[in-house]
Image (cartoon, helix red, strand yellow):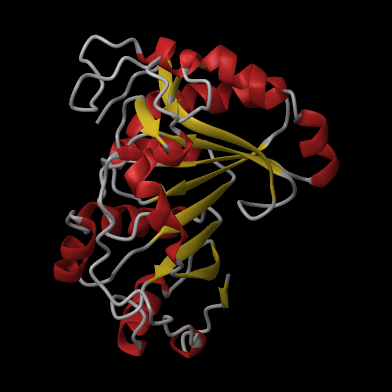
Length: 290
């Protein structure tokens, strides 16, 4: 995993967010993710590098972009130039390389809003802990300028040292959990959950305030016994504030062609997931459906 401290690739800086922590927030989306969840809602955040997004419906075939005879981009096309010369913004670059200083300046421009609302900055992705060195430096820089509340949303799939370094800089953690069963986890996300579970154990023992976020997929992880397994993982003394269940929705499917990917979730997308929270209540864990 990259640990560059000087720059990071960010694919969106979204202001005035209300659901990524307390108060009004700016959410920073880091590019690159080690998981390949079949239902991923941010396919533009999977690759760690800047890439071209192509929205074919906007294309008027003006020829400015320099397509070859097969309709593909020529290998020597300058992506930054291409974005500037497309008159309909059919082609846009997703991902910008930021320095710590530049991103800190951008985020600090909203410090009055954060202060008035009790808000702050949330780091999401992709996976922000793929770029832990940068994240750590940025957090330290922000705190040196103002008492900003910092939060992170993470899959937890990171080396233990990176996880602990990144989390230690945060006031609040949104810890995503995909599936409690190792075999099912590998099937649906492409990775072994062992590092995630180890990091979850450390998070619980640290006492750091956290929210467990579970994207709820029909027929994948919405059964009562699966939720009970989630509850057992989260049971015990910790800084857990609540569980947030995020029911599946199909809006992400439209974004896949933009980055040349095919949406293949592998489950019945026409069925609504079971949102019963009783299994968590039996363990005394607050759960809410978002």
